[in-house]
Amino acid sequence: MKNILLSSIVLLIFSFGITLFQVSCVKTAHADSNDDDDCEIKRSAFLYIKRSEVGTELWTIDQDGNNNKKINIALPSGYTLEESSISEITLDGRKIVFVVRNLNAFTTAIFSCNIDGTNVKRLTPDASGTDLYIEGVYKK
Image 1 (tube, rainbow, N blue to C red):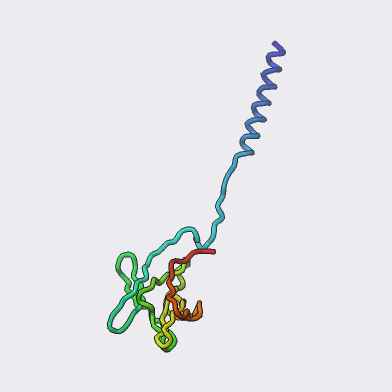
Image 2: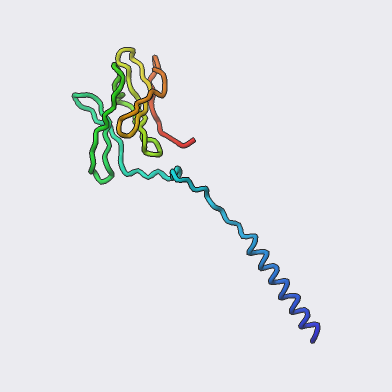
């Protein structure tokens, strides 16, 4: 009887040890969280191109069709928005990347600006003898 009681205590301690070991070895995966939410694009507005007799313009509109706004971009003299190219909003929603055409030299270049049209910057030199196209934006 004493051996059975002693064996039961040893088995109880052994099972408690195994359970404790299992609990301490549970694997958990935690994704790095960023304030930017780089993995998930949350678009509440869209960018579109409007062609008219005045020229090519960039506009934004909310998903529900409200808040239709023209983006006033001050391009250098002799440059115009390339009407056959795709313009993109950066992943953070703060900038627009677009292709422009130099009407004097018959070249294209990629420019960017803030979402409100300010802070226009040339990203590439004029490409002679070829057209440039934007195919998308991504996080490096």
